[in-house]
Amino acid sequence: MSPAGGQPRVVVTGMGALTGLGLDVASTWDAMVAGRSGVGPITQFDPSRLTTRIAAEVKDFDPSPVLDRKDQRRNDRYVQLALVAARQAMDQAGLPARLEGTEAERTGVIVGTGIGGIRTLADQILLMGEKGPDRMSPFLIPMAIGNLAAGVISIFFGPQGPNFGVVSACATGGHSIGEAWETIRRGDADVMLAGGAEAVGHESLVGAFAAMRALSTRNDEPERASRPFDKGRDGFVIGEGAGVVVLESLEHALARGAEPLAEVVGYGATADASHITLPAPGGAGAVRAIRRALEKASLTVDDVDMVNAHATSTPEGDPRELEAIRTLFGERAGQVSITANKSMIGHTLGAAGAIETIATVMSLRTGIVPPTINLDDPDEAAAGLDLTPNVARHRSMDVAVSDSFGFGGQNSALVIRRWTE
Image (cartoon, rainbow, N blue to C red; front, side, top):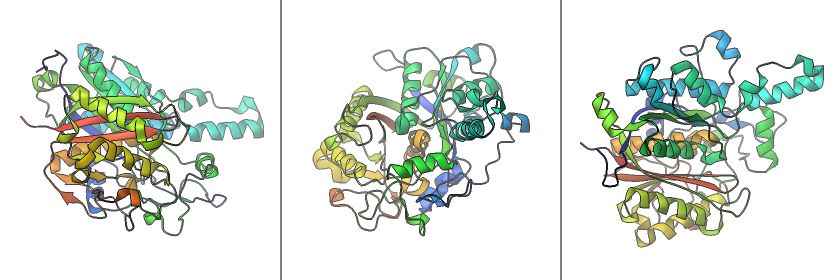
């Protein structure tokens, strides 16, 4: 079950997701394939003071199947989203309600976030200013800090193996899955829950991104606001959600009768060392991350059929990612299908890489490339590339890349292969 180097093969056996399009993987995927937008007016707070008043919120979220009312009060929304996504992934993988014994000791969790419990933090700081520090909640710290999603998943479901949270802005979800993959390959666990979660429903967070002029202000047409690679893009649309996958060694999965959904075969992580928000010129950091991931997979760019692009819909970021794709694939660049999930789910920050990995697995399983919606007038940098504009495509696919890039110049890339017996 192991390649020549002796490291175990690692497969995905479960997936869970909550997005602006749906409350699980199936509903999210169906909406993606149909090209629907999850963006709408902000409902979680009054956005009237902001220049941006739209977001891709998770709608009708009910954590009660996992958390009772007391636990809901003691866990920030981002942790609640992570818990529900983790439970979905564990259920699909056929894992028990709570792990025990050796199974628990050999299962770990790496679930991160870009921002953490922003709603709890901001509300408590405001409360302190109004009424003094003696009125602050004793749960502020455990509700707000970024490692608690991973910790609470273990508390609720029992994994006792390696456990921590990655915080690398919008690359968090990709890094979490990649590091979980490496954890299994080096023998520190048989099973890992990995992904990211983000809850963004607070005026302070949306206002902060708006102050950077990073967000779209297309408030009158929210469904058309997120438009990666389109000349009319004016910034990203903030989104929330969670994505968690169950990774396990192939040997372990087959021994317990679990169904492999796809195989993770490569992971690369790099730094731009360039700018706090802009990608490096030419997307150089992205190029190195994807090349490293392909090297670990013992594959070349000629093997890649699809790229699930980071594609945030920002004026500067999108062209540099396209430059990176041209540099990587050369004359083959036009033959590779490119899709931008954020056109439909917005930018879910620390959850983005995980949700997009799940969408990539679904693409490989179904042979469907989801559309990049709102792509009506492609940027000049897109000339000759297949960006899957507005309508999903069917094609034969064996290998796909999912990449994610974060503020600070932090890059992750995952290579995923379609599972065959």
